[in-house]
Length: 317
Image 1 (cartoon, rainbow, N blue to C red):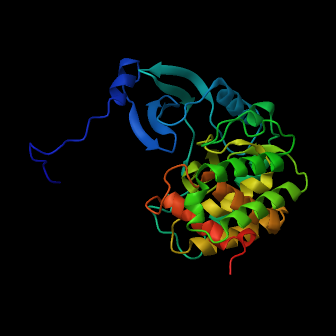
Image 2: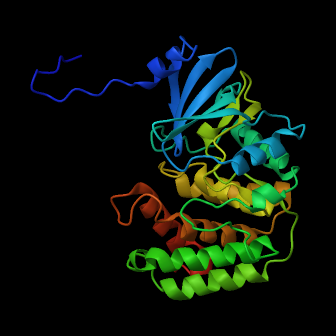
Image 3: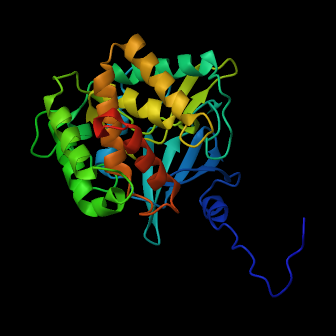
């Protein structure tokens, strides 16, 4: 390791382990980071999350409690206490077991053949979450990037999602239109297909089941699901399956093959309509494309544009 010269900028020391040590947690250590915050292990079965993104509310805490109240085959987060330090929200939560199913595809190259154990894990998690009824607290959540509760003014998830697509496309749709042929017509077809989808059970939706958010035990069984909040709501379990198929491998060399394979698998094993899955995948891309950037320098923006160019709702050639 090179020693920095005295005139080079040195990285700032992480103040949070000291903060937690001063509050009775001398073993505090950084253990991970996600879209919404940084997580520290405190010992004694507890972790703390320092929220760098949108902080949780009492509504979030209620949603966690609603999900944890069900006897799922894996653990889910529970917020035990909430503090604030210099305007930054810190939540204290129970530590979840297991290790990540695998690393993010942006940093770990996935093999061409997805392991059977990984596909079985995804199916087990999807089935488990689909067994949790959607609650009023879940319906009152706002998804990332929007300015109102998803379900506000709507009685059906499909109609609520269509309204979100319309709002999101109106935000910065010109950026996508420059990269997606016949963008306006594709958005209109997406709206029409969403509104024409039949009613479906309303269940808990995680919305971001990337492999690092699923923890497994030593034999690969799912033992915990974490990082709710990015797109958590109540909705059609087919939406969860569609998004999971799309985001499991976002950036690897075989990403397109894996998305197609998982979409077929989830349609077959979970009984979802393939047309509904592809419609929901278009909706996800249209509602998250601008969350991190608005041009090709941002990986998620590029991914969303690519998803839409290939999606049958947008009429790829």
